[in-house]
Length: 176
Image 1 (cartoon, rainbow, N blue to C red):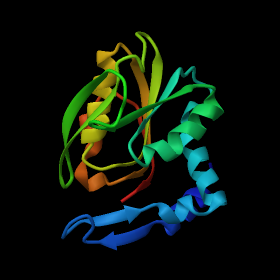
Image 2 (image 1 turned 135 degrees about the horizontal axis):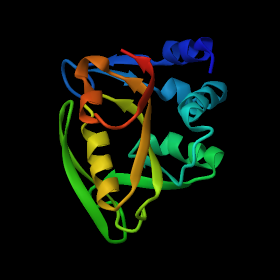
Image 3 (image 1 turned 60 degrees about the vertical axis):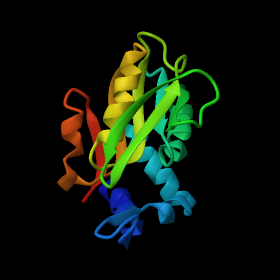
């Protein structure tokens, strides 16, 4: 993907001060989502590192990871697996708690979502503290999955979220 495509994506991101609480600057990607060309560009930059890699499942973290993960799965010929907030999945689950930039949360995935040895990629819109990504990786590994990479459209570098994923290749495209 050309730098101009990434630059257009970054230019479309809206800063929302004091959301979800005082002192936080929220990086709002909804302008990207509302423009079909920008949305396609975002999907292309997220899929690019994995075009020639064998992938079994694409795992999307609720909620904005759900937007990007299914089209990436389709482009790579892989299945899609959602990781959701606690209490949202209907069948038997595993769960993991983690800290956020502005609180804590618990997420879960179905126990049968990933089989031992399956090669998976983790997708989300943004990596901040790395807590949700690390929790997702913990659950994937508990089920026997091999996390071959993680891809995020945006990285809040100053929060050092990558440090929580020391043995995972991390791809980010817009860094603040």
